[in-house]
Image (cartoon, rainbow, N blue to C red; front, side):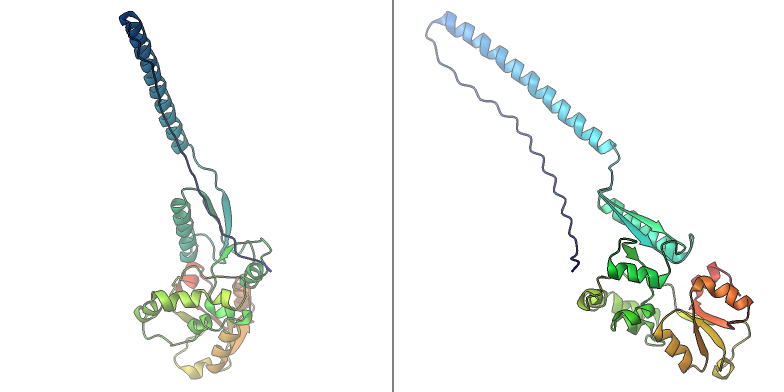
Length: 272
């Protein structure tokens, strides 16, 4: 059984500069004078040492601050979209925040363009904990085959009237967090960190679609998701599950007549 890891970084620096003195009073004036001079010399020497130690400590601290810290933990973040895509930019901003808030102790390396695997491969890596990656941005509609039920709701069509209504639910501290924690509740070895929004999903076709009748029996590419296959079937079209990377060739070869995707994905990677 894999257990979540918790890292607690504690740095304690205690610097004590203590001075203690004791003396025996001598009645003779000469001895008193000599002892007084000796005490003054010792005091001056102690002051000089303390000043040197303080200067040295300050210099050391300044050097530590000036020296770039070496990350104590490096995490791999997988993203199916290429560099420049809005989702990849979100990943890069997330990595910046993590590095800054951890004072350089935690570094997140971004791997765009599905170089660590497609959605199914990446989810399996997270579920099994095989070390291929540590973080992955996933569309909720792909979670159907991994035991998720709450998060799948966000893959259903027309459940929100507006984007504002959707974020009102997601930003709710109790409700929004409950959805993100579902992976732990079902034993999927995953936990959600935050939500992203790339807009509503749309159907793109090689021919104009003006009503539902125009969609009938059209071969539409969908991600490998039971939820999306059922949705397209309910609209009268024929769902063709395949990786997004294979979509262009499928369109050229006539294997599919369209696809459903959020606008940012298609506008950044023109395929039609």
